[in-house]
Length: 142
Image 1 (cartoon, helix red, strand yellow):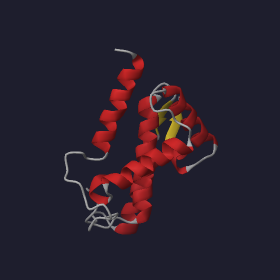
Image 2 (cartoon, one colour):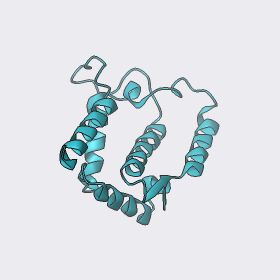
Image 3 (tube, rainbow, N blue to C red):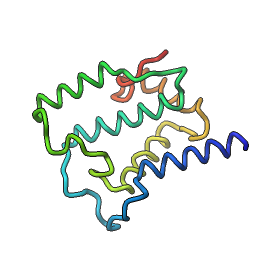
Image 4 (cartoon, rainbow, N blue to C red):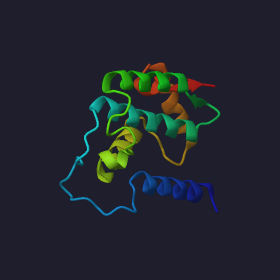
C-alpha cells in the first residue's frame, strides 16, 4: 500500500467519523439542531478539534496546551454554570454533519493543508502559534 493510499484512507475514515455517518441524514436545509450550545463554546470546541488534528498529524512538532484548555473550560463553567444541558453533547449533536464538514474543509483551505501531507499540518500549526490565534493558544511547539 502506498503512503498516499494509506493517508487518503485514513483521512476518509476520519472524515466519516467526524460527520457521524451512522446517523440518519438531516434535512438538507437544517443547519442547527434543537439543542443550543453558546457560540463561544462552539467556537472553542471547533478550535480544539483543529488543534487536535494538528497534534495528531504533527506529533513531533506540537502537543496540546492542556492548561489553556482547562482554563477555558473553567471560564465556561463560571459563565454558564457547572452542568449546563449541552455540556456532554458531541459536536454532531449541535451541528449538522454538513456544517461540520464545511468548517473542517474551510480550515484546511485557509491554511493550505494537504490532508495526506503531515508537513502541511505542521506548517498550519506553526502559523497558528506565530499569529497567536485561538488555535495557536491550544498548541505548544515541541
